[in-house]
Image (tube, rainbow, N blue to C red; front, side):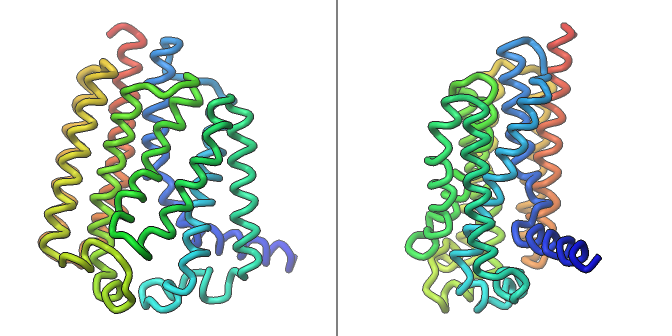
Length: 298
């Protein structure tokens, strides 16, 4: 009984460590890519249980590695920051050895699952992991960290199309670049919370360099670019009205996100966690319904 209690507590600690509930940010866009790829390859939105399960495992293991490695690399920073010093990686709930093992296991799981998907996924698995690890180093020497994080999440749609089609298509690249700018835009807003901390500790971020107002404008430009690339994605993929509606609604949600932060920085958590989560779900729902409509010839 004590063992089960300890196991349950440790699972909860690791779930908190990687903020497992935020997987929705990347899962929505890998699902979008899988639906569109499946439609183009076989005329159906359904890719099969095996492919779906393998993609889910790949997504979870890759994200666990990315978050776990970041927590490992940032233990010194997180310990000094009042906003992050209660994370399981620094308050003693997860040991250094357990954290290292968590990263190793998830990296190996991602490579293994990629091997089971197809050869291209396997060949790209280690480069993908290296890109995910790169983010954890960037803010120590470059303010481009916001965009590198965007690249990391932008890999998800590419992974989805690789799993279904065994290749990388133009529309998937456009979708991924849109994700890159979307993520960079909301990470810029989120990093406003650590602006003074970054300045004091010589960490590189756009807020630390340019302040609040400039960061808000750069974030807005990123979100404008995101919508632009999503427009190009829908056009090149030859999707229908409902997918276009998804882009329009996404644009309105990004405007709302920017508005929330503009009126007061205390709204950053709501703008970051709630608005972006709903955006991904809504965009996926629109693309899925559009594809189902096309599948049945409506």
